[in-house]
Image 1 (cartoon, rainbow, N blue to C red):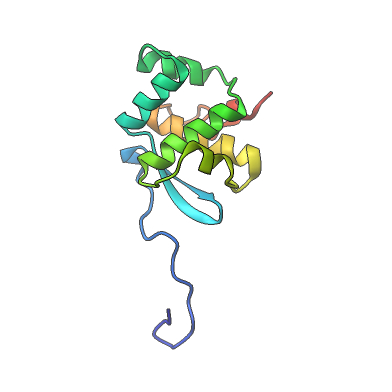
Image 2 (cartoon, rainbow, N blue to C red; image 1 turned 90 degrees about the vertical axis):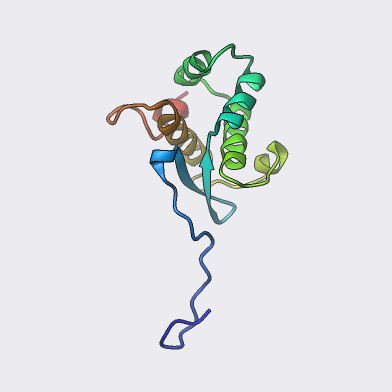
Length: 132
């Protein structure tokens, strides 16, 4: 793609930006900027996967800060599917998240914060999720 001066410009990976009011967040995964969103379908999938009886149970589990790497993978995968990415959990497990494990925990923390309405000033970037 060339700009008006004739210089070569790289095509943007994503033309859409995350809308936090819709519960969306952005993350760079496998070198691409992707949108993640925990839609109702994604939340239902997480309830089933984690054996939660309700959204409140799911939120309580996530707020404990004790998530395994498999949990991070599942939440990322559900968020990516909710954001329109057609990826399986196995696909996501093989992908690199910018910032490594800490980056993945940060994305999950941010995604959970916008989904469950964590107030500003609380742990909204995954700090609790990344701690041992």
